[in-house]
Picture 1 (cartoon, helix red, strand yellow):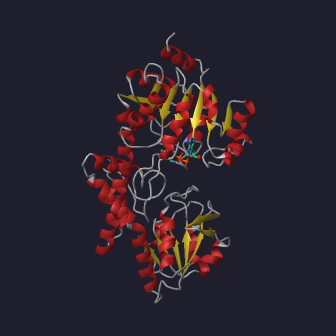
Picture 2: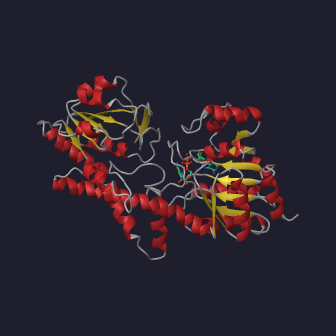
Picture 3: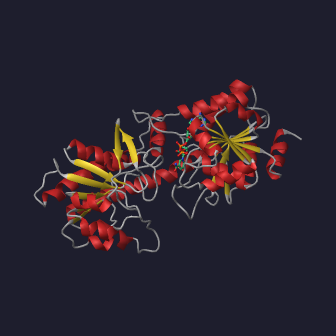
Length: 438
Ligand SMILES: NC(=O)c1ccc[n+]([C@@H]2O[C@H](COP(=O)([O-])OP(=O)(O)OC[C@H]3O[C@@H](n4cnc5c(N)ncnc54)[C@H](O)[C@@H]3O)[C@@H](O)[C@H]2O)c1
């Protein structure tokens, strides 16, 4: 049997050992999905404390229940390790490492580079590698393939197989998770695509093969750019509606009754998370190297990044109606996570809102049922415990993240002024002189 036939057989009979590089929001659920499908899975992450926690059968990712880790650790189907030499015994690897931005706004590929360097040490004939980290088109071929071939002397599509498959997981979502969200896969060669597809089909309900790694890389960026631009559009709509004196939320709800040709997006205090604020900038950066300006991305990014400042100016206006200055006012921010019902603070606009409020002299407190404390700009913030007591004491309650656990009627009843950046109060907030909405 050649390398391709051997790999296909190992996936078909599930004897392949799977490696997951990076055990975060993407890698850990994927590891569980492969273990659930009957594969032996080795998860590798350089952070020893994460490895130890997982090997104790405990999960630090909100979407992955500890009992699913415990079950697979006890049966031997899943082990975590900080030792990259475990890759020696692995047949197929998914790379799920972070792809953030540098302070300058340029892509930071250092995690993909370091993961590739580790892989290059242990790559062996027949190995199948899938890059899952979101990145600009060309990364899998230009960076991963080139380096792996350079170090190993092996040939992609013949000696080993390499593909790109973007992760689309939406943390906190219950209806679509890793197992039932269709997975796009594009290989460096046709055989790479075929082998990687055969692997993922053993565990994921729907796999969508495409003709190249670049199509798969670009498809992910289209999805996230689509969201980012549409959020930019409704954020600008909220600025326009404010000037027009029209309720933007009612406008959007009315438009959303159209059964075709419209998709509902809602405004908010800014973009958050590891994907939407970042991924489109990977694309615009790549295009800049080709002397092309991605104009829609630049414009939407400008509007979205201006939202925290706009929210603060609206809180200031709201306080003004009660003859209060922002400076010296006590503001209680509800929600620090970037979206409802999760604990993820990455790129959260709440952090910008808090920072800007403080800069203007407000006394800021926060509450988040999912985030008991956090560090930002070298300072520790601790969630208040007596929520309604703090609501009563605040000059303004700013709803920044609309967690569903909040008792909004009680918050409204106890507050003297509310700024609602998410329309969390809905009808309760209408025609109420102490409620101001985005
Ligand atoms: N979080 C999401 O909702 C989401 C959704 C779709 C796609 N993505 C993309 O998936 C990728 C991973 O995102 P995430 O949210 O899981 O990140 P994360 O920060 O939650 O997890 C990444 C993990 O990789 C580990 N790591 C760092 N360097 C490593 C290395 N060299 N080898 C092995 N492990 C290493 C980190 O310690 C961390 O545990 C990113 O490219 C992201 O854009 C994320």
